[in-house]
Length: 150
Image 1 (cartoon, rainbow, N blue to C red):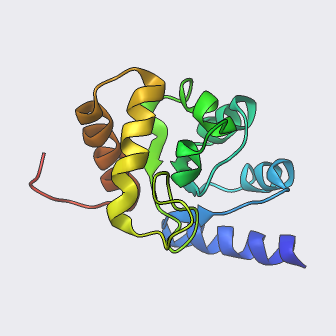
Image 2 (tube, rainbow, N blue to C red):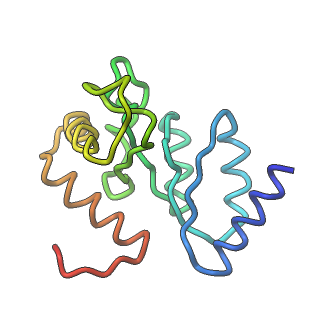
């Protein structure tokens, strides 16, 4: 039943040309298999899988949502982020959950996104400003946001 409802949601996304936010847990292969049958776009939210899955998602035209987990010690996603093109990454919170270090254990909030930004810059060995500028553009592109800010 869950798969059928998910397919209906993807069809709405496709028909309305709206992005879809996908949070998949312990079912990444099934999710990718279903998504590839639709002409839609979006983000795999709270991504915490390996590079092979990231490449499949990117090949489908989707973005990878990176949240607080990237700041955790021994985080698998920290290693994966190094090889995900910055042009396919979105910064995100999962407020009130998945609070980044050094606030882990507290209620998450959007202001903590800066810790995710810094950790991605560190993992990719690129300037924080480049991560900020590119992920801002990615967000605007995905959601069709028109602004005069550069």
